Image 1 (cartoon, rainbow, N blue to C red):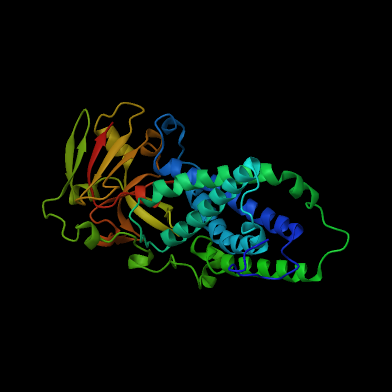
Image 2 (image 1 turned 120 degrees about the horizontal axis):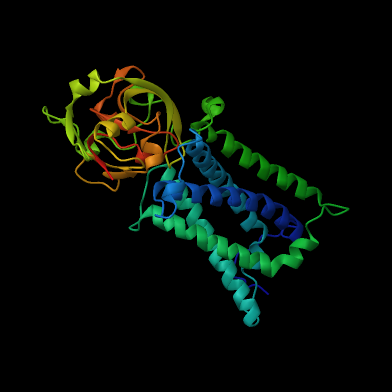
Length: 367
């Protein structure tokens, strides 16, 4: 019996078969979102044991995985709403606890629902670059994903027999169930089609609800952190790139421009879910390493001119440093970098998160 103080929604769709169908869709979206999220976390902040195994190929690897992460995360929002509506009466069944086993099951559901709500909506706010909370987003998002995964396994174990019973299509279905599932499908389709274009080029014209249109911005590319925010609007007139290694040296911008120049076509792919390809021209980082006398297998510590920020210093594993597509870029789409895009020089490398494509480079140190 449910207390009268709680709202009552009378519908024949508050039943197991509908919950199982929505749960399958939601589970598939969350599985893709969880796995691609692990890839993103590993590329942004890899543990030491994983670093030697990171690869600069495929070139668009991070673009695809992070795009899928955000696309499935956004699609999971209406799916989660539909799932919670379907099981609403069970969430507030009375009495709330009917024994030790039931208490553990209810605790698992509480952890699952709370973690999923926080995970999806903090992720949604991240796509908007809006952080109205005091805790660090990335670390919190990572551990909430594991809490949600744990809660989901507990829930599946507790409800396994009921899920199995209603997994197959019944001989006679509710007419309103078809309409409800069609409405949920339409909602997911609208959300996906109007947001996925920030990553998927052929859907770009439909980005009505996407936080970013990736082809708009200075020099045809969006900017997450501007030169004003980083305190790098004015670059010292005597700026020289410092390269530290067994044979350290310094290069002025004019000297960098006199070195062999290469052009690559690579995307900027950001954790918020948008990505866009551009033509980058500059000096190969591998050539700078050779000139510094770097031993084989050396990585880099790259330091930016910005005064502070979590990515002021960035470590680049050897796999990326020696890749011929990794550049110290001086131009974008044939134009000299603007301040917002990292003038006088920035890093561009394949299969790397945008936050690791360091702008306003001041120093390269062989490690």
